[in-house]
Image 1 (cartoon, rainbow, N blue to C red):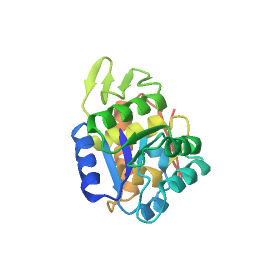
Image 2 (tube, helix red, strand yellow; image 1 turned 180 degrees about the vertical axis):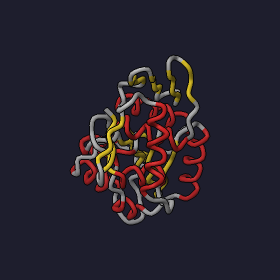
Image 3 (cartoon, one colour; image 1 turned 90 degrees about the horizontal axis):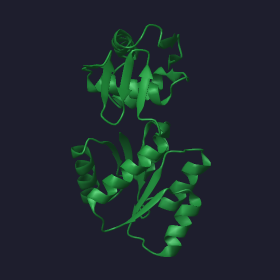
Image 4 (cartoon, helix red, strand yellow; image 1 turned 135 degrees about the vertical axis):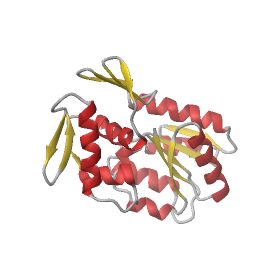
Length: 214
C-alpha cells in the first residue's frame, strides 16, 4: 500500500511516516505543499492524507482542485480544525474521512486500511495458474508461494491496478523507482522477470508506449 502525506509540520510528518512504514505502508511525504503541483499520477496512491493548515495553500483548495481534476483516490483530512463547519466543508468538497489532531496513529492506520479496501474491493487476483494476494503481498503459482523482490511486487501491483489498460513506461518509472536515475532498460528487465512468473502472453508490450496486463 502506498499513501501520499501532505503535512508541513516536520516533527508530525516524520512521526506519521515512520509509524506507517513500520506497519508496512509506503509513504511519500510532501512537506512543502507546492510540490503537489508536480505530481501527475495520483492514481498510484491508495490514500492521500491531507492537512488543512499549510504554509502556502489552504488544504481545502488542494482538496477542491484534486476532485476538480478527477482524482478519485480516497482522501483523509488530518487537521487541528475541529468544527462541524470545517468538516462539512471538506466532505462537501469530496473528502472521504476526517481526523482531528491530536490523534492516535493506530486510528489513522485503521482508517487508511478501511479506505484502501473500499477502493480495492478485490484483494485476490487470479491470472491463469497464478494467484496474487494484495493484502498479504504474496504471489502463488500452482498453489506454491513465489518469492518476488519489492521492486517486482511494486511493478506487478501497478499493472494489476490498471489491468486491461496500457501503463506508460514513464508512469512505471515514476511509481516504482521515483526519482532514482534509471531508464527504460530496467523496466524491460523487470517485465521479463514478471513474464517468467505469469502465464504466457499475460503482459502485452506496446512499443514506445508501455505495457498492459491482460
